[in-house]
Image 1 (cartoon, rainbow, N blue to C red):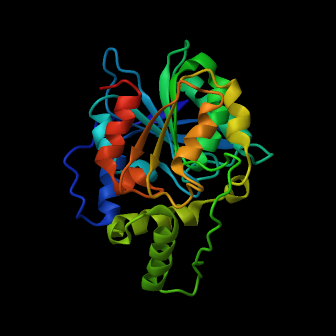
Image 2: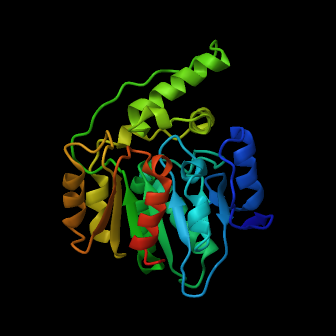
Image 3: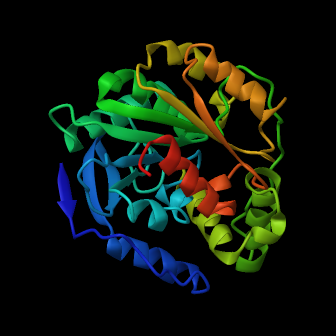
Length: 297
């Protein structure tokens, strides 16, 4: 394990600043750490401080994403406890895992990283979004009692039908403005309920993440690997969904019902007026839900 810099809770963020400036402020506030991943490294960022009686939060982002999927909720969460956010294998700054390139292999890398960063069986809360929940379910099964809770947010791979969306493609011949239109359109189709909330930061994050994505997660979305793996997860299960998540077919409650089959202790929070990327569209409500479900309030 290697690490650089000091960490603190980023506070007082001016969200009207240029996106690169906003992201640079988070990078400056973070402590960057690395654990093994394939032939390279899994890159982690940490914000906030450990408090007595408050276990750390580990946040796993979605497909074709990076830690920036959590950018809007990191300040609120890091004001309460230590927050860790890796770039998943083959995404963001992290290397590809060893073959085969599957959620299970990615989950093993994440679990191994957590064991290195939190030795001697220290517990953490794992919160995982979309494809990160697929990876996180395998990681949770590998980690066992190392987890205090496991929270699934807006995931596919539940064995339920889901909307198959067509996405616009960015081409190398496009201007910056034309590329921005592509990413804004795709955000409106998948990630947001209200397209008027798609700001310059969201478009910038989407563009940067897509261009760095090497791990192809979409082929795994139609599987039932999450419910098939949940019997091996011993941590108490939690779930958060946006009420208007376009992928929540046939309903959010149907998704909760799947999760309850092997985890009847499931506790849930449904975020009103939010789509798939609920932690960006309704960050305060989402952060509140995380803190309540993990007992950090």
